[in-house]
Every structure is written in C-alpha cells, then in structure tokens.
Image 1 (cartoon, rainbow, N blue to C red):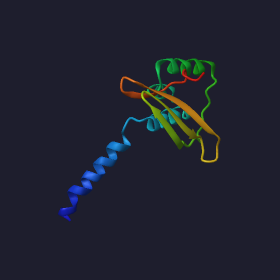
Image 2: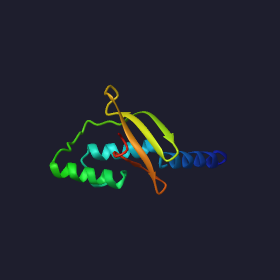
Image 3: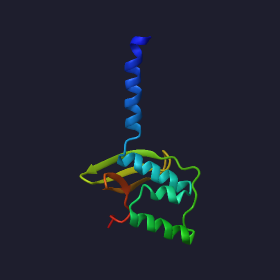
Image 4: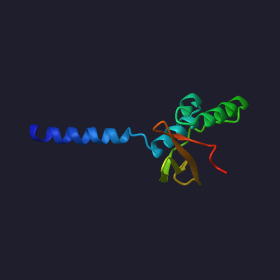
Length: 116
C-alpha cells in the first residue's frame, strides 16, 4: 500500500489544482450561480467593474430575481488572447446563453459591456 500512496497523493493534488484554476468556464459558473442565488456581492467578484455597477443598478431597481432551480450546464468556450466567450445553459434542456469574458490583472471576469 505504501508503494501507491505517493502516486495517488500526486494525482489527487493535481486534480484539486485543476479544479480550482482560474479559467473562463469556472469564472462563468461561479458568477451565474451566485447571481441566481441573489448573492450580488459574491457575483461581482467574478465581474468587471462596469458589470458590477450594472448589477448594483439592477438590484436597486429590483429587477434581479432568484432562480433556485438554476443549474450551470457548460456547452463550450472560445478563448482568444485576453477575451473569451462561454456558452452555457441554465438547465440541460434550456436555450443556450453566452457570457463575454475578459482577463483583468490575470483573472477572468464576466464583461457584459463588450457585446455590441
């Protein structure tokens, strides 16, 4: 058993690091899940500053609704330099939605300002 301990520990550590990595997919998931739960302050941690201000404004108007049934279903991601797009569904059978992402200070952030 001792012979297998190190490789198993190494594999476990590797997968934990990959799971915690900052990438467009994980950032989009954290942003959308917090937003669906009504955790605006937490969602803003994964958004650009202008997007955070939009969230504050929407919350002040009362236009943000809770979605307890939300399930982030990843579809695809496209990364080009410091920008990315993450395509996801709120549920496996729901319509696809796209989030624009930008890299700010080495971290991926949701940017709702880039769509034209």
